[in-house]
Amino acid sequence: MSPEKQKNGNKSTKNKHIFVYANNACEKRKLDAQRIIDYMKANGYDLTYNPKDADVIMLSSCGTTDWYTQQFFDLMERYKKYDAELIAMGCVPKTDPIDFNKRFKGRYFVTDNLDEIDALFPEHTVKLKDIPDSNHPFVSYDADDKQRIKRWLIQNKITKKIYVKFYSAMLSHILGDQHILMGNKANLPIDHLFFVRTSIGCNMKCAYCAIKLATGPLKSKPFDTCISEFKKGLDQGYKQFLLPAGDTGAYGTDIGRTFPELLRKFTSFEGDYSIGIYAYNPIWFVKQIDDIQDSLKTGKVKSIVVPFQAGNHRILKQMNRYSNPDKIKAAILKAKKAYPEIAILSQCIVGFPSETWEEFEDTLKFIVDSKIDIGVILGMCVKVGTEAVDIEPKVPQEEIEKRVKYASKYLKKAGYKTSLTGTILMFGGKKHN
Image (tube, rainbow, N blue to C red; front, side, top):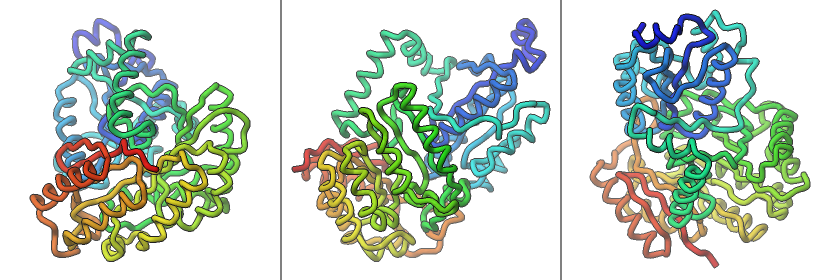
């Protein structure tokens, strides 16, 4: 125990401190992080934003691509230096098990079984099952790093308002007002948003996806619980709601309910509020578009993420995705007809194994022809444990980088604004007629 901790008398659970870092993860993992914080607080821990003061440091992880995995390992080395137990959480233990077990020797728990945390802290009297899902993703700040300036800014109400307004305006200028549904890229405080997670896990078998290894199969939240959470947000005065899930449209298939049924209930309440949906996989979006028309016509659903992933039939088949681009486009245009102001957001992959240049261009044409409003293009990362490993030929990394740069030029010419970081391209800001 460090001299500082001895001086502070941190000898019992009641005055121990936990530091959590989850900025390197998606919003769903940030919701998990907030729930874990609530759990630790219920068992006597205090939250600290300075790892120097922590008795326990919890580091979340994302294994979507090798870049995100490496970011976790880099952060792991940083937080090893502190006089605290480092506990890993999130997806990397299952998306990258070989590297994880080689490089991390501490305790951990994983995304598809958060309840494992109870075994790590058997002395805790409050169990994780007693802690409800969070409606607010945790935004991390490290006061012992360059982020201490950001932390100082948001501690003051006036500077926080200016700081958040500035970055929100900048991102809105580039991408559009609904950009937040693609993730809190700037890790801003988003106190004005209320999250209702409708399910966890996913039953899809996408050939490129390693996250399914970590999240497990679909588990829908009880229908009445979803409604209760939504009403709680309304009662607390929230005006903007986000519905994050790995496979939103599949909601209820395991409990005898449907997502259109849930959405009808969400849009039936009186009041001035808006809803954003993430992520409505095309297999469900196409199937359910007619059933959600009345909900869309209320004007309360302001944005939907439809991750089409590719605009070419053959590549979609290779990906094990819904493979009819024409029907996906028709469903998107039907949604825009039902509510012309709706923002359709999306995600697609460039350089999937065996993809030709012409098939890559089909994806760019799909974005423009479908009038996608905001989106992200990801350079393909072949993860061990996915079917993509066995699909040949692989597209060389330099070719993937070339295509992403070309996509930026192509979309700019089509009227979009773009932001390019490595092989990640964000686009938006186009005015559609």
